[in-house]
Length: 207
Image 1 (cartoon, rainbow, N blue to C red):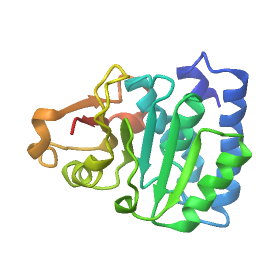
Image 2: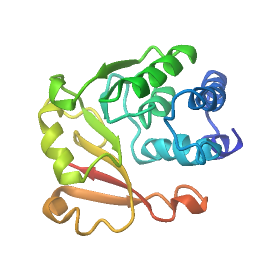
Image 3: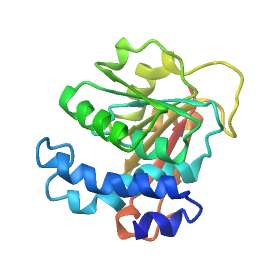
């Protein structure tokens, strides 16, 4: 918990408790269902929870915002963000039912009331959201085509216009060429000191 507390010193006791429970529950579940690489589970706090929370450094979602997490797997970035923003609703969707079951169970056990889950493809989701978030699911232009229908055109309620926010790494120049004009790329390294984040980026694209 020291790493999360270091970068988010204003967390409430409830939030601290929820993050602490996540650090216990994910390894327990990972023994049964492999939602995180077995060799990587020791890096849960930094490489999964804190990485997800980079989005909270990029944008402070206002209360009432609706966020879709596509390809959430075991609940990243949706569950850490739901802890961080208890007045924002997060809808988590994934094709793999057993991974979604892990995310659902953990959300229930840590007492999240601002999350919902959907087993299936994003094509089966017809709701509208202020933002879509994702963690390295597919190239940005392809993902944007899939989720454009889910991004609300209602009046802007956040500091940024509604859009797609993804967590990615490496050289993205080729991938982003077709959406360059509507895309902002932000390095995560200045936010967090750990070496893991040297090549990590937040990519924000307006539809």
